[in-house]
Length: 132
Image 1: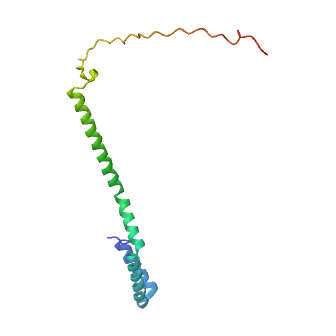
Image 2 (image 1 turned 180 degrees about the vertical axis):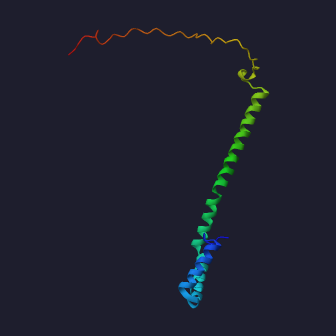
Image 3 (image 1 turned 45 degrees about the horizontal axis):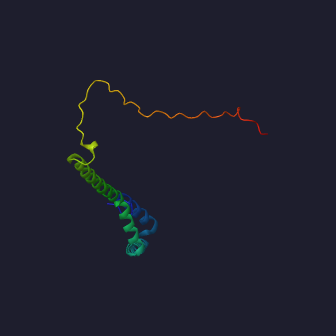
């Protein structure tokens, strides 16, 4: 059990030191004043805001993971819908092709049917007259 980040052992050590320094009579007064201060602190609006913010920060990674999983599930549904449309057949003949069996023979690359256009040779800078 921890209170404000202080464990049982530390709390006992603080009480013993306070008893030695303050003495038994002043210890009662100090305990009452510390108790009032802690009660006022925990009932204040600032403490409530601090607690809410702390809870939000602690739950932030869990919320981010949940949102990411929701998005991933939506994307998976879209992919399944798209893949079911292509597997049932579509208007695009590219998707209607049957897969070709694998062969060990090397496949020749397709021929390039586009020939490069001939360009007119440009005059070099040395062929141009000097207009200086």
